[in-house]
Length: 231
Image (cartoon, rainbow, N blue to C red; front, side, top):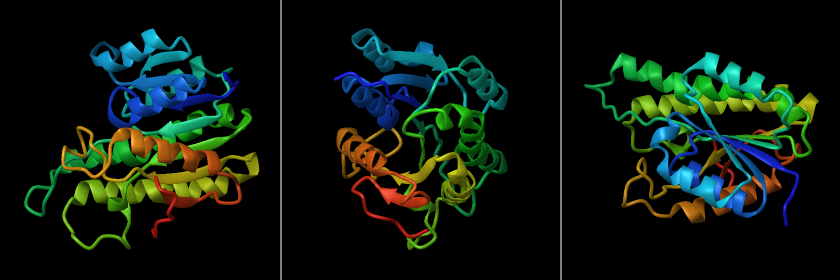
């Protein structure tokens, strides 16, 4: 059954983001799918042909002016669920943690979710569901770090976690519930072929976590299977 709900998804051209688009569109949601290069998003364009309830927008989340421009263009659109999914995973070790890669990772993984959240806050606040989530990783958990390495990715996701935790407090007066999500180790271009679960399993679980999200459990770090993760 078609609903009046609308979801905005970044990084919608592949992997987890693409599966979010597929599942929400299949279930009748209006989907705003954003990715950096629509011309290179063949799988997303196939979904657009199958589902008229998908709208696509080019958005490089590292371009903060572009975020502001899209928010302005969509200023009258209600966003029930905003999913910050876009991210980068620069590989690094103690001998090769490039400062440029580090800064870019922080811009995409930590700063962009904040910029998108604040730019679209009126859209979320004016909706029925009022939910904001960011895809993170257990690799951003200090408690879970028992293997070291991945300095750039770990630190950028830890920063994103803190950003979202603060937003969960500051956006509560607007009735917006916020969560940080761990998708599991997923078989994507980023996760690799040896990962433990497929995108369908991950996104199905994440959607249930989002459905269960409310002000009562806002501000938590939650895995796709519903387990709360220590920061």
